[in-house]
Amino acid sequence: MIFVGKMKYRYDSKKYFIKVIFSSVFISFLMIYAIIKNIMNFNLNIYTFIIIASLYELFNVYIAMCKPVEIEMNDESLIFRAFNKEQKYEIKDLKYMMTKELANRKLYLRINNYSLCRGRYWIDTKSYENNQELYINLMELERKINPNQLKYNSRRRVKDVKTQAVK
Image 1 (cartoon, rainbow, N blue to C red):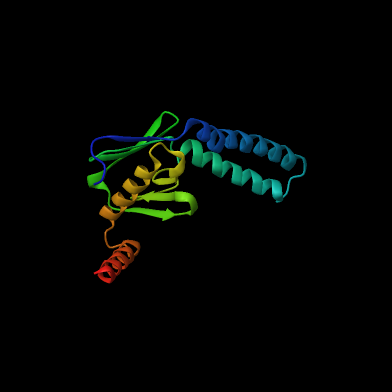
Image 2: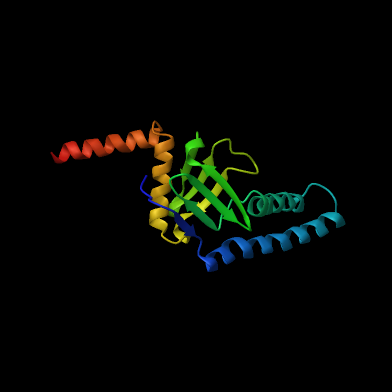
């Protein structure tokens, strides 16, 4: 592992307020408006879609904890915290860890038997303290758990070809 000891990565509080809290408050008001409009004219319309999408987003933020405010990593465990809750994974028990890398070092992380309520995380690594270190440690942990994954094999081959070309 690259990390030694206990590493805590905290989301920048201003960014978390704007990206998560403020947007979920806005979504709540939008959902209330859509419910009122849907009651006035009940049928399957755009307001029904807004209600479903709003419920899903609020569920992800507050119940499933998909956008953690703090990530703690050490040699034994990986802990995600948000809204006075935490989800802890023992590293020795991790059987599956997959990241989908998106633009600007954003990650969609799935762990073990991920489900609607646990094991799915949207991590905007650029918004955390020590963001470079967090990104590298998550990638290294994924490589340790899934060493035969295609993205690591192809990167290793490209690295081997580059080192052979230099020689």
